[in-house]
Length: 330
Image (cartoon, rainbow, N blue to C red; front, top):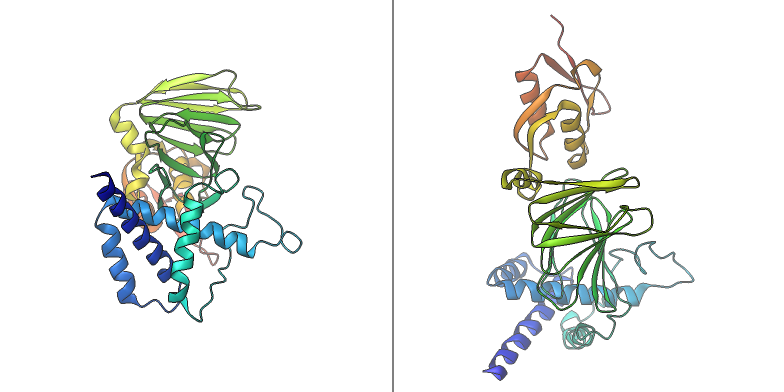
């Protein structure tokens, strides 16, 4: 039974390595990409294997193109994020066996003491990443994390934005570093969002311990599931949340913004996180109007239409594309 399981894992790993190499070839046909999507959708095991092999392949890319004398390393990662690939296009299929061998070596942890991988999203984009230990990270709009598994710790630094972290059971602690604090969990599920000065942590499952790192919270705090904590340079405070409140806070996972009494100024700021077309409040007298409802995060015009139909507010778009809101006169 053990040999059969091992053979299956190796077969899945080899298939994942095959797809990593094939998809990296610009000549990969749409039909092949569709076949890959069908293979990945067959099981969570396939998805996780592909993410592991893809991350390992990207690390070999960084080793291949990184030249300290000619390029400046990323401040958060010891290599540029998503560098230009330098595959040999002359015979991509003949590279597959060598690539799988390289990936297999890296997958065993040869580079685990120093290797880092960055994942990021653009404005309006969301992304799910499955890590080598089957932990999952869901990145919200305009976000970036750097993953480092070393010294017996699974460490993820939230560089910017917002993410949901689902730590897989493991003997090693799962640590999120964000805004001068160390957030540790065993196999819990928590979201972290960075603000201008503060950070917000919401524990959805399990528990988390937030420890100061420099000028973070004044002392260590342990929070349980159903609890949110906002912390910053001047300390922090925790409060219980209902399941409905947590669902609203995580509505971005379904591409939505859930408002429940927020002001118009708060709602506008939230929409601007997801869209390049910005909304501005040109009249301060309407900034405190209160809103409720679910809106598609990447449809600011639909949001503006709802506001102007519910309140005495008019909207106008300038040559710069910015939608400006003001009180309707008359």
